[in-house]
Image (cartoon, rainbow, N blue to C red; front, side, top):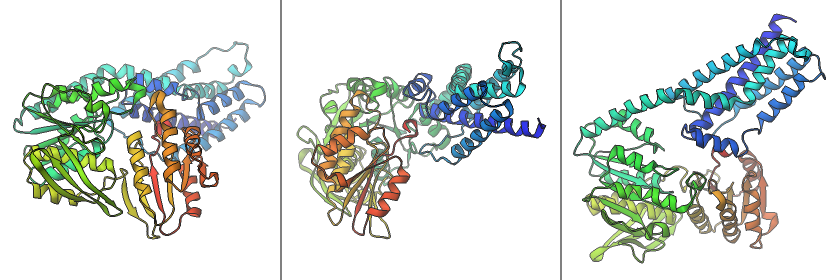
Length: 533
């Protein structure tokens, strides 16, 4: 067999193996590099799905006698080339970020794969399978086995690198801690919650920037390493306020960040059924979010959103507490009243203790955005930002991308973009916002909600019922929550001809091109994270 032919086959199979490793490491990164979380994701239908099943089929073809070894190898190489092209062109919502840690994992994974290949290549002949006497079959068989079980290589690499990563992280941790100790006058504000924390962070940053030099954790840098990176790479000696977003997927996550930054004040935006697959119960979610309150000094302040039962019912005794509410303002210190929604924005009044009133106007829409704004305003008042500065900043706040942001297309179609990870409260509010647009058809495009544990089916049915009562056309994307959403929508007597199910976002766009007209409004509610595709 020509040498060039063999080399081409090996190169294609090797390239596919490396891309498979890239995908595995990407999913590992989305699961915070934690083997336990990554393995739970694998167990949720990803151990042998998609391309892995194709790899198993190709392996069976190679070991069978249906084709001569050279033709079997060619068939595998062609299939591998197709897969390489498809994987290379695929776009992800959260692509792999090639950090130094990723390169270390990738390198060790490659070394393990090479070692496995070399060990497998010296398997002695005489096994009774004539194909084991063929070096082509042996080499390609080993490559397919490594690819099929590539996740084991990645997990092994993470385990091997664990002592190295701990040493590196400890050094970074100490550097970040030293920076904070060198800035004793820095005001540190923690923000956590099941949802709303990123929007609240942006709103608070804009308001406080009227009077202070503010640094906030960018994007979704809400993990311990994300916070450490922000401090080490972005913090300046002249910063006066540090707004630290604190994410969590299990007990202790918020406390871990608090132990590093030692916040003097904080905002808890929500306690709801998010990440129940890792938390296990709403009680664990509540305990984790209130780790922020528990970590504050006696002279600090915690601002709590009382719109959520799990927030309102949780007493705080160690620090001054101010509670706010929009949907449930009864026992709140601050509340939003006189709320008026329009397509161009919202007007409302902040009412507080001792007859306090502050009329505000904003470009933002939706009750959830008003609640997030209200929490930021309460914290700004605590930090002595003048009322006129607050009023100016709130009016100038830009909509946060993918979080109930609204814009119009040149064709006169209004787009409501609420594509960032949906939740039961936010999705309901987004549908409510859509219901206010009555100049044309009200259309929703959604795959439903995720990471809701055992409640996922019922909560998506409830979302479907709310959609059925308030929307003219519903487009359900993907199969992950399809049955629950369709059942909920149809239970309201929704016209079946106005309900569409498609397999992908691309298909939904083709469908919309035939449905939308000038004056219509389209709500994009949630976009499935890559870990659930």
